[in-house]
Image (cartoon, rainbow, N blue to C red; front, side):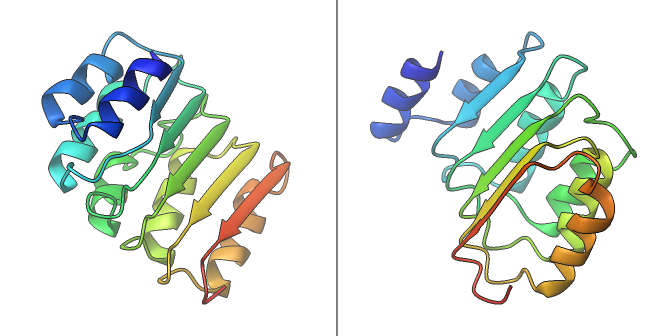
Length: 149
């Protein structure tokens, strides 16, 4: 799956229809290296589809277009909805703010690894939220290119 996804991304063919092939069927790992073609509703649908008790790893690259505060609120609206998620990586999530991150963390309180890159809207308040919510479980935190943190 990972190799096929990477090849599709290299050819810029990861459309909403193709994403469905990788998010349906209760996968335990979803790695989408290029979500640039997915808007808010498509990304929200893709995440919601794969948020099952089996999902442990979710990695979304170039997800800035689709990952906004609205997407986070809609996708992670129920507390603990992604309780089995242990690793989350959101690369290029430039529309996600402290408020949206709080929604994500409320839905995924057991993360052991969190990676957020290229998000200028995150501030030091996000660090406080991460510490409050994930202190018991978090082992790895990456905040690359988040210049306001």
